[in-house]
Image (cartoon, rainbow, N blue to C red; front, side, top):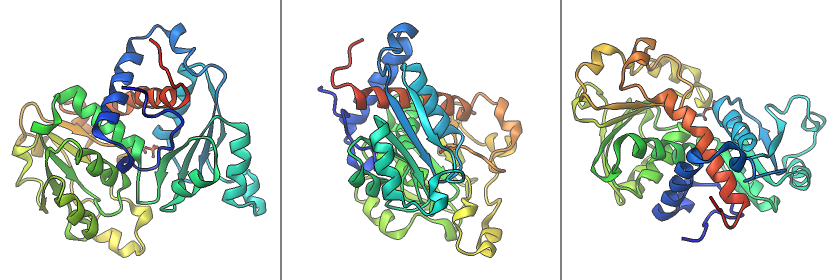
Length: 311
Ligand code: CP
């Protein structure tokens, strides 16, 4: 298959087909086998511009590490403080300037639609590193890659997605990505944090979805549990957050009711939704998942920059 990612914007997981994601996963596997000196030629001298308007540990640093592994480097900011945005410069001008300096632009921004806006302004490929409560496409690529790595064929699995399904952008992107693979999905959340209705009805036409309030009721059926943080910062009313915080806590007691081969994923950061006692369980794969982020992002960077990838 010719490289379908070359010079493309990565805005929404909905812009990609199953075959394109499988292509990316194959490149990700190949990069992990490559000698470091060969890896360093894949983006030699190229520059990644990182524009972060919201906090991040994994997304920003895994992209930066990936760029370094490929022989390139990164510039940018981890918060607008200290940039000319403080003097009143607008996002469009900031993007135009970065477009002139960089080969790729990675943007995280609190507003829905921000990444699409950036792609309209910049000529260089824009990667959405998280836009509002809308999308986090590279996280979904990583999540689906991790599920395949541990469980093989996704089509046969039952996945539980737990927590904040209303404001969580990782859950949204993951659901649309999984719609290409059609596993059985249990959505587990308090009523207040159910998947937005238009999304639920849209996805119901694409895959098998069922909603639950109780994790205990279904944990025994799950092959994968994807836990999400309640997104405190996106609640319009802090009292609403107080009502639902701590709704689901994964501990060893509840895990004793799960299948032996269950895997637990989490995009991280976690707050209190997975107890630290679970980290030692062979079921806990969330730190491996975050580590794999540097490889999936390296595969993405290489595919965006080079039309013909040679190994
Ligand atoms: N999963 C994720 O997006 O983590 P960060 O917010 O640390 O980038």
